[in-house]
Length: 189
Image (cartoon, rainbow, N blue to C red; front, top):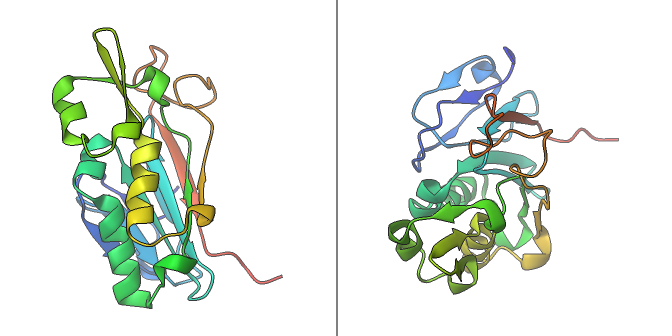
């Protein structure tokens, strides 16, 4: 991974514009990076959190972000889209977003304090007896739609990091170190 741009992910909302000269570097205290440089190689590291991939085919720009519940609360998605708008004139209605493998609601039990932070997202909260479960993917989709990203342009992975033994999960006992995803601009055919 020495030729990729790595983020020192801190569950915040800092997003940074990068280019090829940043390949091999660690961007400090950052949970989102964007570029329009075809030689830049972006990476995001996740276990149960959401790895998010943004692509604007009209401006040929991309971004990646890392979002757990803290990142969603801090609006990392909004900051990533905002910087894509500012730096590359990305139009939200044309933006394509892929939400990668993450822990599914069935296995993501949270305390009532965390659930309360997302009380506006009723579809993302499930109560089962004394337990509360949160759906990070639903929250991310709703945040994207609220910014004008078309639902048809959002794809959510059905892979659960807890259930899929090929992926790492902090909630599974065999967890190793998380999964690193790499993203670059597509090349012309």
